Amino acid sequence: MRALLALAGGFGVFCCYDAWTRPEGPQGGAGTWRVRVAALVPGAPPRTVATLGTASGVGAGIVALVLVGSVNVALVAALAAAVMPVAALRGRERRRRRRQRACWPEAIDLLSGSLRAGETLPGALAVVAERGPEPLVGAFRQIVADHRISGDLDAALRGAADALGDPVADRVSAVLRIAHRVGGRETGRVLRTLSAFLREDLAVRAEIEARQSWTRVAARVAAGAPWVVLLLVATRPEAVAAYDSPAGLVVLVLGAAATLTGYRLMVAIGRLPEPPRLGTRARTGAGEGDA
Image (tube, rainbow, N blue to C red; front, top):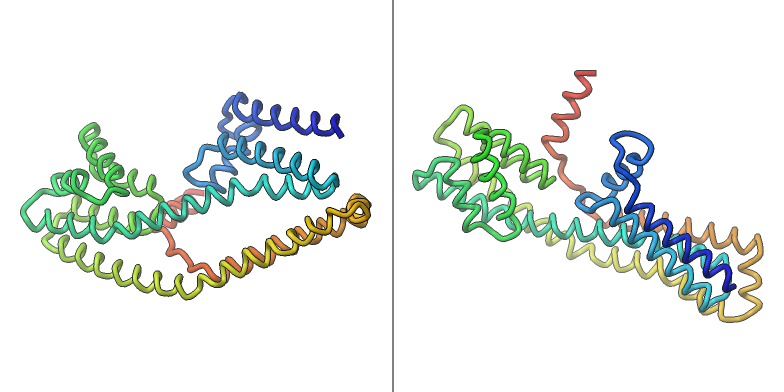
């Protein structure tokens, strides 16, 4: 067992070292997994995700092997723990976007009020960058900085919308780009209408999510309860021997697959659909046309 523990620890250290030191690749080879991880966990460095997943997987596998003594149970625990950082980072990203979405009505109201007071569009953006809601201040400061450097407000707005990755940011960016290109006196009214719509949408979403919160709780309980029972049963030597057999490995794999499938289904049922992004759809259509 000591040799197995040493081998698992050494493999974990090697994976962490390889994730941090392998050179970047634009396409294929070393760069392929980074692209996939970046798409799976937006906003998190791929190396950090790989390091956290490897470290947590190896650590959970070693702990399970020491406590239970079953190699098969340790492998399942290592695989489950390796996925946990991805789930945690994706949850953090969803909470960040939720906080940003809740701040958009206030930012739009401030932007509309500045335009109505006679500010130019760059000046109104600077006002929001100084006195806007905290989760969005960084994005508006980046818009102002990019505009001062390049003088292209259209590109600055588009870049900020891409960086935020939010459908609301796409809509606000589209309205401001149109106003910057063609002008018009209705920009403030359009922004106020958008702000009212967003407030109503946030209120409806909050009510629905509160009513469906029991679905997420039930999914977590249903996913965790069988494995707690497994750990309790695995305290008996005969149960450990059964889990280390080929039939025990099949039972563990099928149980893990059933748990993951059921949990994902229940979470998908209880989650509200996200509105499509305008910029992504436009770029996709442009790419298909060019091809």
